[in-house]
Image (cartoon, rainbow, N blue to C red):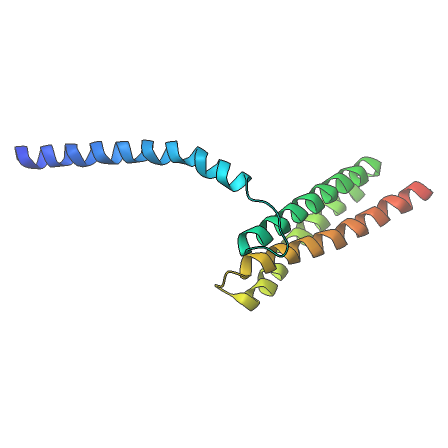
Length: 141
Protein backbone atom coordinates (compact mmCIF):
# COMPACT_ATOMS: atom_id res chain seq x y z
CA UNK A 1 0.00 0.00 0.00
CA UNK A 2 1.06 3.53 -0.63
CA UNK A 3 1.75 5.53 2.46
CA UNK A 4 0.49 9.06 3.00
CA UNK A 5 3.84 10.66 2.12
CA UNK A 6 4.01 8.85 -1.24
CA UNK A 7 0.48 9.91 -2.14
CA UNK A 8 1.22 13.54 -1.23
CA UNK A 9 4.48 13.45 -3.24
CA UNK A 10 2.73 12.05 -6.30
CA UNK A 11 0.04 14.71 -5.97
CA UNK A 12 2.65 17.46 -5.88
CA UNK A 13 4.47 16.04 -8.89
CA UNK A 14 1.24 15.89 -10.89
CA UNK A 15 0.38 19.43 -9.86
CA UNK A 16 3.78 20.72 -11.01
CA UNK A 17 3.58 18.81 -14.30
CA UNK A 18 0.10 20.16 -14.93
CA UNK A 19 1.18 23.77 -14.48
CA UNK A 20 4.31 23.30 -16.56
CA UNK A 21 2.24 22.38 -19.61
CA UNK A 22 0.16 25.53 -19.10
CA UNK A 23 3.35 27.56 -18.97
CA UNK A 24 4.63 25.93 -22.17
CA UNK A 25 1.36 26.60 -24.00
CA UNK A 26 1.32 30.20 -22.87
CA UNK A 27 4.86 30.67 -24.21
CA UNK A 28 4.10 29.11 -27.60
CA UNK A 29 2.33 32.19 -28.98
CA UNK A 30 5.20 34.65 -28.27
CA UNK A 31 7.71 32.23 -29.86
CA UNK A 32 5.56 32.06 -32.99
CA UNK A 33 5.31 35.85 -33.09
CA UNK A 34 9.08 36.17 -32.78
CA UNK A 35 9.68 33.72 -35.64
CA UNK A 36 7.26 35.68 -37.84
CA UNK A 37 9.24 38.88 -37.29
CA UNK A 38 12.51 37.46 -38.62
CA UNK A 39 13.45 39.33 -41.77
CA UNK A 40 14.91 37.80 -44.89
CA UNK A 41 18.48 38.94 -45.49
CA UNK A 42 20.52 36.82 -47.87
CA UNK A 43 23.76 38.27 -46.52
CA UNK A 44 22.58 38.24 -42.90
CA UNK A 45 22.80 35.75 -40.09
CA UNK A 46 22.11 32.05 -40.62
CA UNK A 47 18.54 32.45 -39.37
CA UNK A 48 17.93 35.34 -41.79
CA UNK A 49 19.38 33.35 -44.70
CA UNK A 50 17.19 30.38 -43.75
CA UNK A 51 14.18 32.70 -43.69
CA UNK A 52 14.99 33.83 -47.25
CA UNK A 53 15.39 30.25 -48.38
CA UNK A 54 12.12 29.20 -46.76
CA UNK A 55 10.26 32.14 -48.32
CA UNK A 56 11.58 31.22 -51.78
CA UNK A 57 10.69 27.56 -51.29
CA UNK A 58 7.16 28.42 -50.14
CA UNK A 59 6.63 30.55 -53.25
CA UNK A 60 7.99 27.89 -55.62
CA UNK A 61 5.99 25.16 -53.90
CA UNK A 62 2.77 27.18 -54.31
CA UNK A 63 3.58 27.59 -58.02
CA UNK A 64 4.14 23.85 -58.34
CA UNK A 65 0.81 23.07 -56.70
CA UNK A 66 -1.04 25.59 -58.89
CA UNK A 67 0.56 24.19 -62.04
CA UNK A 68 -0.23 20.62 -60.96
CA UNK A 69 -3.88 21.54 -60.36
CA UNK A 70 -4.04 23.27 -63.76
CA UNK A 71 -2.63 20.18 -65.45
CA UNK A 72 -5.01 17.84 -63.62
CA UNK A 73 -7.97 19.99 -64.67
CA UNK A 74 -6.90 19.85 -68.33
CA UNK A 75 -6.57 16.06 -68.39
CA UNK A 76 -9.83 14.46 -69.49
CA UNK A 77 -8.59 10.87 -69.49
CA UNK A 78 -8.82 9.28 -66.05
CA UNK A 79 -5.97 6.88 -66.82
CA UNK A 80 -3.65 9.80 -67.61
CA UNK A 81 -4.71 11.52 -64.38
CA UNK A 82 -3.85 8.40 -62.40
CA UNK A 83 -0.46 8.19 -64.08
CA UNK A 84 0.23 11.83 -63.26
CA UNK A 85 -0.76 11.26 -59.63
CA UNK A 86 1.56 8.26 -59.45
CA UNK A 87 4.40 10.14 -61.13
CA UNK A 88 3.99 13.12 -58.82
CA UNK A 89 4.01 10.94 -55.70
CA UNK A 90 7.17 9.20 -56.90
CA UNK A 91 8.74 12.53 -57.79
CA UNK A 92 8.06 13.90 -54.29
CA UNK A 93 9.81 10.88 -52.76
CA UNK A 94 12.73 11.29 -55.15
CA UNK A 95 12.98 15.03 -54.45
CA UNK A 96 12.94 14.58 -50.70
CA UNK A 97 15.49 11.75 -50.65
CA UNK A 98 17.75 13.40 -53.19
CA UNK A 99 17.75 16.71 -51.34
CA UNK A 100 18.30 14.99 -48.00
CA UNK A 101 21.38 13.39 -49.51
CA UNK A 102 22.58 16.68 -51.00
CA UNK A 103 22.14 18.45 -47.65
CA UNK A 104 24.16 15.75 -45.90
CA UNK A 105 27.24 17.52 -47.20
CA UNK A 106 26.83 19.59 -44.02
CA UNK A 107 25.43 16.72 -41.94
CA UNK A 108 24.64 17.89 -38.43
CA UNK A 109 25.86 21.42 -39.07
CA UNK A 110 23.92 24.66 -39.10
CA UNK A 111 24.22 24.78 -42.90
CA UNK A 112 22.40 21.47 -43.43
CA UNK A 113 18.90 22.99 -43.24
CA UNK A 114 19.81 25.78 -45.63
CA UNK A 115 21.27 23.32 -48.14
CA UNK A 116 18.13 21.20 -47.88
CA UNK A 117 15.79 24.12 -48.48
CA UNK A 118 17.87 25.42 -51.39
CA UNK A 119 17.82 21.98 -53.01
CA UNK A 120 14.06 21.63 -52.49
CA UNK A 121 13.58 25.03 -54.12
CA UNK A 122 15.77 24.22 -57.12
CA UNK A 123 14.29 20.77 -57.76
CA UNK A 124 10.72 21.95 -57.21
CA UNK A 125 11.27 24.81 -59.66
CA UNK A 126 12.55 22.31 -62.25
CA UNK A 127 9.49 20.12 -61.75
CA UNK A 128 7.20 23.13 -62.08
CA UNK A 129 8.81 23.88 -65.46
CA UNK A 130 8.20 20.29 -66.56
CA UNK A 131 4.54 20.44 -65.54
CA UNK A 132 4.14 23.80 -67.30
CA UNK A 133 5.49 22.18 -70.45
CA UNK A 134 2.83 19.45 -70.17
CA UNK A 135 0.15 22.14 -69.80
CA UNK A 136 1.55 23.96 -72.84
CA UNK A 137 1.38 20.80 -74.94
CA UNK A 138 -2.24 20.25 -73.94
CA UNK A 139 -3.07 23.85 -74.86
CA UNK A 140 -1.66 23.29 -78.37
CA UNK A 141 -4.16 20.54 -79.12
